[in-house]
Length: 396
Image (tube, rainbow, N blue to C red; front, side, top):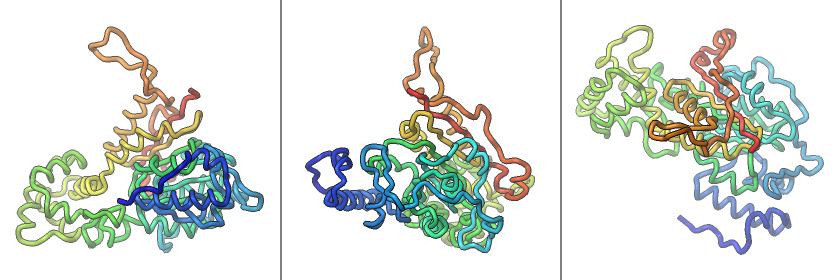
């Protein structure tokens, strides 16, 4: 790894003195950081983009965004997209879940800076932008970022997208001079496009390579995992991440099958699971196993833990954090974390009395999880398992 350029003065001082030489240095320095951490930008606003974008909008001063006249910042058009916007004929289809609820609870508006940690098809970001907010977005899927660049072109002065896992957002955002967000959102689900694209291997409804990587540059695929992990590891993955009751039997079947032939495709793998665990009820026998593999390949639960640990301190007072999850493992982590971060006092049996909670930074906005309406589920059946929880940063 190359060393970062030597710096003879602090970043805050540099940001407070926006000379042309200073801006060129910042652009080079932050570009180096993005390369080292593995981030890249899609779109023109504002930090790792073109020279013109850097000149038009730059966070000079900690947490202060300054837009030059004529750049179009703040959003002029809030017109919604026509219904056909989410046509499955689009190269990257994804209908955002709980969209109306997210907008109502995050309260985007002109002058607010929002973070979308799971850009996906861009639906949530677009709605935030339509309400006048600026958005910093992230995604590890290069196809999603490529689509977002085109879809959100009208909001170039308000929108910046970075490639990377949302768990790493503090390492890069803190170097831009932004001190906090008015709202933060992550949608932990797999996008419709990923599920429908057989080449990504997220679904056993169509045959394709057993991949399951959200970041296609990640070195290990699901096929690599199932062909190299031992029986105990496979059993742990299926039981812990899929809550699969037949985890041991399925793990043994995989070990036996791969001695004859390498397991390479989704249908090949699903057939092994079905043979070891016949169908019971409406759910396909491979459903929980595929969920478990996806979580393991992408380290999803650890990423969620990392994000939730960092996000509250990046919220401005009164700023809100919204998390959409799709299964009980994720929702349990979100629920328990938000409960802890919103509890003024904590108590343990060995303590004589309750003590003040030093981690209390939030208050719960949604006491009960918000779920999709019957109308939304009818339009988008994949919304039926979506759960939204929201908390707000306390004033002090």
